[in-house]
Length: 285
Figure (cartoon, rainbow, N blue to C red):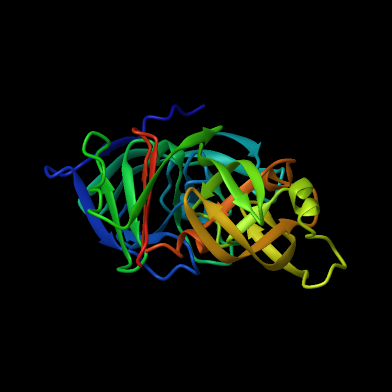
């Protein structure tokens, strides 16, 4: 058994900024770490804890612990081995003793070496500038700078360890709770019960059968035409909906609604402040 002793060391100014990299529609950046090679890092608000590719963990001969089975968005059985990465540097921010269970990440449809989840993100405030393709990571005491205008601030709640919003509306249907998932390249994923209510069913007109992927493997997905979505005072037209076709993984649970990065990227910037439990959505008129 390995204890989680993940520690963040911030620069003197309390924050760092670095460019986003091309990641197939996800929040990804390049970091330095052991081994002398640049590492592709995914920031995933829908993962707890962090994760490292199992092949990379073997090459670096990381300190490891026990093995087990976890769950993911589309799988109920995700094998992992506990591991600790000695250090990781994102811009001027250094993460020490990163607890990151080793998973098979090479099966994902995008290249990633490390996934930073809740055990890291809860220790900072982050701002994703989609328009300028920049990422800012700030000390929780400092938070991220608030824009002068053109922004909506909403209270964050938490579903288990995942940031979420209460009371969004999908095609006029009020949703009790919707998680925010920067590790999903979908727009809005619905649990099977809500998908059925909104007509997202096999054989229905404008419903396509496609494939999705996540930790532990992939699965069949039903994808429907866009619906209007209201988040706070903001009305977003034509948001693409999808739902798992097979009842496996977290997103197949009744009542689940998940806001993915494709929807978040419709804003100019999004900031999540875990300490203050606040979400800021910046938009351009």
